[in-house]
Length: 134
Image (cartoon, one colour):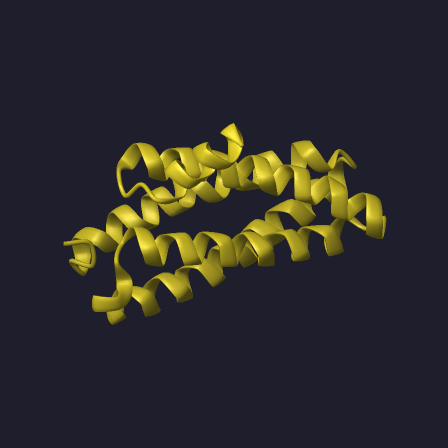
């Protein structure tokens, strides 16, 4: 019950603290989900594709709520396209690391950290260039 109340507070918060908490929650969930799916399918790449798909939809729905996208259709299209591109980048980084080392947790964390760094630069550039985040 306490965990459920905490999850409700996190997901209903539009503050940067709520967004950060949700991001940490999704990251942890993705790591757990990846391991469960790997256990079921015994294939790193299939587990990664399914995990990235589920995480994409979770993040997308939360960000639509967080940024109140119903009034910003250009942001919705921009974010949808960007998210799909970055999920593909994450998959290819993961595939590259998993080819070198069979530790799926290490490969997953490294691929998400590299992707996060790229996203930070990408969104920072486009938010100023095209005034998307007003």
